[in-house]
Image (cartoon, rainbow, N blue to C red; front, side):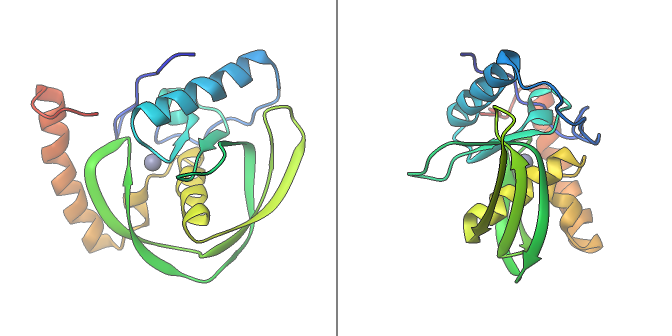
Length: 172
Ligand code: ZN
């Protein structure tokens, strides 16, 4: 198990559509385990493979008090409802903005063994899955904001990123 480095926006491959996983082997399961460790080390609730520099359709998440979940090649096949709540992202530390998301989704994916999983998620879990799913499509949460809010978020981010690059912000 190893803690991996988090890719900071807008570095590659965050802006790329991730490749489908075709091989369900020990390397994939090791990557999922390392991603979970990295997520916990950074006090995150979800992490997508592009955030650790791997452009593959794989995400992990763990609700507070919940069981860790690993989703491979996920698809969101149904969406209902709408809620506007603040989100952040380990790839955009210190930046937060309210994002509109569906409140109920149905997900079809594979697990780390390659078996099909199909389930409904609500509320916070549905939000985390939608956020991480976006990463696999090359999107981050600020791409979901309206144009004006996104512009001001990008301005704010430019300052944060400059501090990260200068080493004056602890990007934990
Ligand atoms: Zn994120």
